[in-house]
Length: 426
Image 1 (spheres, rainbow, N blue to C red):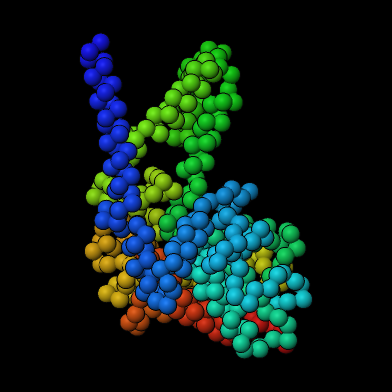
Image 2 (image 1 turned 180 degrees about the horizontal axis):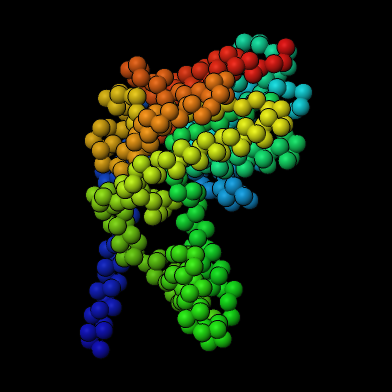
């Protein structure tokens, strides 16, 4: 009894100590590179005129915009937001400067892409779409109002962008020009996984277990049951044959309770800290199981072929609906840019992260295999080299463009559209 009592007292003391340590360390700014003060300091480079209060508001809304909501077929979308710096509509696009609602009377241009197109960490008015809207607004090139819609969605790659285009056409919201800004996320998602694949697999596992009768194993045999759940690979490899649903609920609630204990939360915190010093194959839950180190040639070939086929199918659909199409190979910080000019990514950090090294390898693979030759000249624009001679910071973090670079990309896109004679509205 004395041992049990002492164990209980020790358990309580450890949890109290863990609680106060976590409360202290998570408020401090010396243990994490992602704390608020560090974010403010780095964003000052991009927005030197914004007060700390407004920068905190920007960071707050940026974090909110990273929350994933379920969207049929697409799997994920940002939350609907009406903020000071981030506004995302129920129609599924982020608002831009000089934004107009969709009208068949207007000349409508759609931008598709991932978070770089969406404009993660920058204001509505500083995205690529906003820069394009501003240029068209200031330079009357059309007798119809030109409206650019930002359908960029964090985490999406070319397959999801194609689905989004099909949804819009189905809903009678056909654009005049559809622009696809791709590259980065297609390499991140070389295995066709999405940002929510890991979470959905986990939920499917639970749903499958709940859908079976408790005596399934006894009805059909353990061997058949085991083989059945081995077919989809790891989806249900850890299938538990718990026949008592009350016991299952009790265990579920019990584990959830344990996860709320300070000592358990402290162990998760330490695990995340240690991740910084491990050579891992993934860098967040959305990339669970992703391997950027091995078989880079094979993975890059898969990405290139997927891009070519997705884009060919997009072009076929758009041609049928009389929509002009422009495919853009987007710039990334890890190639054709001197990291000495970067505020948010050092050469040392680049050397530490396998996913960034794979992105560079993948882009080099596209060049070495003449990727551009798969497109008609008027439908393709390679923007990877537009940062080569820049001697300034161009990014707000390791991946996302700052307002200056968004504006430069927008100008290059408009020049290409005019050169390809896509703006036919006079």
